[in-house]
Length: 187
Ligand SMILES: Cc1cc2nc3c(=O)[nH]c(=O)nc-3n(C[C@H](O)[C@H](O)[C@H](O)COP(=O)(O)O)c2cc1C
Image (cartoon, rainbow, N blue to C red; front, side):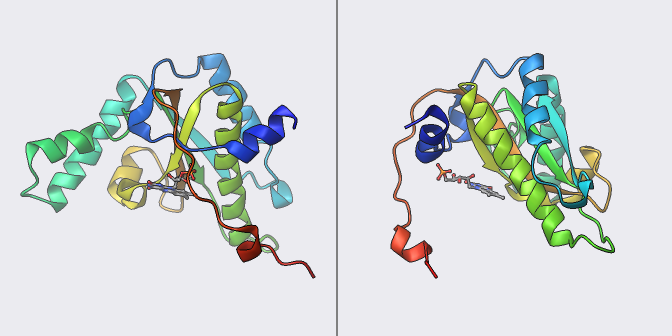
């Protein structure tokens, strides 16, 4: 089987806490985003954009995540807050994929959102092909407007995914996949 098919057929996520240094270089980040921006995009609306979060920036945003968490959970322990603080600092690089879907006369918002999801998947596959492991997750802060504002999102923008990227500290075990007979119909 060729390399691309094999990668797609055996792909697995690696949890963020199992993603170590080194992360992608600046040139590799540019390649990743160039590839992600090649996804099908009905009407060429470019209904997505990317925020690369690395180094100290991971902790700056983490401070906001922890502050928002404490505001909503005043009795949270220091341990829990420490965990919230390092949400985006588990992997060396997190690329936030921002959906910019908006009402359009011809292109349904649903299609624009799907395009942003496709951009997440392209990032995942491209990073895997470079030898990095990945995790496409959202978690609670992806839906919190206070955190999104700190990330610079406009009120109309949403997070399609935080794609965590790094070297796998350990290989993930295989997990059960749906039987084709349950998901594939031929007409
Ligand atoms: C939009 C989206 C959001 C996700 N958010 C989370 C999440 O917050 N936490 C999580 O554990 N998995 C999340 N996942 C699932 C992981 O990406 C991954 O599929 C899962 O950990 C199973 O691993 P696998 O990809 O190797 O099957 C999300 C997937 C998608 C498509």
